[in-house]
Image 1 (tube, rainbow, N blue to C red):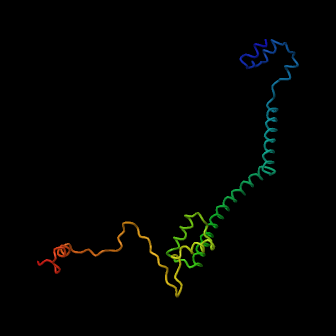
Image 2 (image 1 turned 90 degrees about the vertical axis):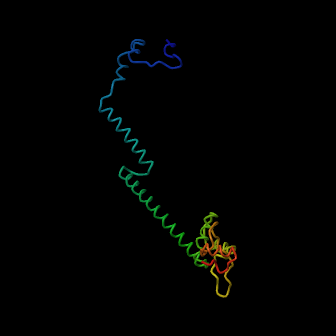
Image 3 (image 1 turned 60 degrees about the horizontal axis):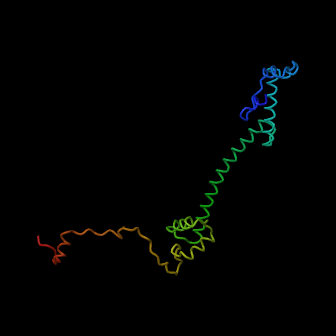
Length: 186
């Protein structure tokens, strides 16, 4: 009989009919497994749901579902405030950068160069950091009265012409090449 229950490492399930036939159980033991009424099942489900609700409320530190809803509404408000705070911080950072550039006398056309320098280095622009960088980049500064303007050249794109050349007449160029300074006689 033991071999029948444990076939291939899996125990065979016993059914109530198999128990009656094999063991000859008495009627009172069968009655203990009687089916539950719908009201009893509903009570069991209600108890389990109430227990789950109590655990959930305890986890979030609230008393009931209304308090939980209020907590989530409050959290939504925090998200909106965080976005607003991030925007204001970005504006403040930009204003502080502009103020530092103005205080140190950086030329308006060189402000973008200074900002790009700091961004490229991955550094925050501050008054102290800008002061140190200006020691190596005097071309960004305005010339003070009585001092010569720093000698620097502005980089030009490769392949760009330096200025508009006046287009000359091909007849004049040919005359110069052939040695007729006054041009061809027509």
